Structure formats: C-alpha cells, structure tokens
Image (cartoon, rainbow, N blue to C red; front, side, top):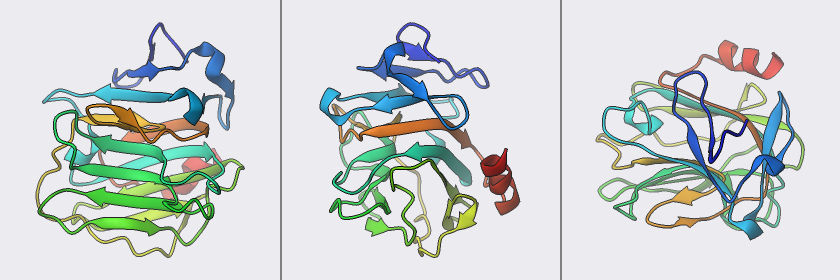
Length: 211
C-alpha cells in the first residue's frame, strides 16, 4: 500500500519512506501487493529510526525477519533485500542479499561491525533467490544463535552467533542499504515483510508460509 511518500505500517505505525517508488511500482504479490524494485532506478523502502523506537530490529536480543521474495539472484552481485545500517557510521552492516559473486540464487549474509568478527559473504545452502516466490525467515535467538528458514524449512547453513555488544545502526531498509547515501539496490519483487522482536518458532514460520 502507498500513502503519499510512504508505505504505512498499519500494525505498529513504523511507516517506511518510498525512495524512487510510487503506486505504479505495486504488482501482484504472494499475499497481496508487492513492491517491484529496480536497481536501474535506485528503488528502496527505508526508515531512519530514533532512540526509543522498536526499530532497527537488531537492537533486540531475539528477533525474526520474514519476507516473501521473487528475486533472481543469478547475475545480481552483492545487492540487498534487507539491511540495517547507519546514517552516521559507514562501518556497521547487517545485510541479507544476493550472492556477492552473482553466481547463483543463494542468500548472502554480510554482518560487520568494528570489534566483531565479520560474517563475510556467507551463502545459504538452499537457493531461495531463483526467480519464483520463496519465503525467507532469518531468526536470532536470545543467546545470539542464528538460523535461516527457506519456505519453512531450516537451511543447513551454519551462521555464526551474534557477538556480544550492541549494533550501532539506525536505518532499516528493504531493497538496498541506507547509510549516508543509499546503495546496493536489488531488482525483483518483495512482499509481506514482517519484523518481530522475538524468535519465531519453526511451527510459527511454517504457519506464515502456509497461510
């Protein structure tokens, strides 16, 4: 849905700002209308948060990022479906995106913050970015352990646990990265993005997929 320059969040009120997107970029999605993102047009949804808000989602010890994607990863090198970063510090990055080499439809994890060991372009085992509608859920538990679910099934990729400490991020974006400037725009359809400040169970994720 589009309301002026934003897409409204009817549940929590955390609207996202449209960047080079309009209602003309809404297309048939998996569960309703999806946004059609386009790298050539530098399209993105973004929110810059202030202290006290529930976003960025990475401020919570446990959280879930859930979305439907119809994205062809092959040929799209190092672009982003979901990201959290900072407008004032170019270093921290929490990125779920296309493979950094653009070789296939795997999901690429790139997590960086100075003082921590990078998760440096780790790829999923499954290939959810294959040009059809696929569901992706990234889950972090309170102890920092992480997992990826593709279409409700846990992927076998071994994602390192979150390091101790607090992320220095203030932006949440879909379709690219927002730091001082917006970059890394992906091309494809993304629908029904949901962020929870808790770790969904496997049964809950399966319910999202089958509903």
